Image (cartoon, rainbow, N blue to C red; front, side):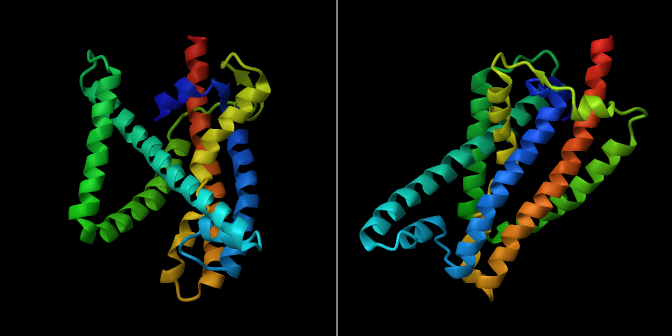
Length: 251
């Protein structure tokens, strides 16, 4: 992870780009989350955005049209989001293979095969192992909370020397070939990928005892806790990764 981070950090502004682009995404998604929390409180619905899009125009004709297109956009958003998420472990799987086989050259089709394998494995669990999904969710929650905390502590405590404060927070480095503004805006997508699911919990409206109160709290918790935890995680990794980058540049 650290090697990957140190390799890609300079692209969209370097460490300051990673941090400020993430915080920008958190700010914008906080506004979106506030709107979703208000709608979820007023009209708790497992349907989520398509239902709200149908009601908010105040006109049945336009409400049906907006609800129809919103529903389909939301559907394709989840499909494309799933594809982009699976591409991450697919790339990690091929790179793991390279770690144990240094002479192996990864081809695009290798990553695609890994992508298909992970996709079908996930589909197989959903179809044939639905009863184990709750335990998998509990295990995942444990790994995210405990593993994230342990990772932050270890990465922050182990290095004998960290990168300078200026290198992490001020020294902007743009290697995209685009203007600074375009590089920054494209980099915000990375932060949006991290924090940008404030509507996910609203689909549990029918499973909560008091959704009008519980859903807004859950949306707020996701944004607040996600921003704080990822800021700590990102700052820790950029500090350690940029220390390695500084060392590489010096060497």
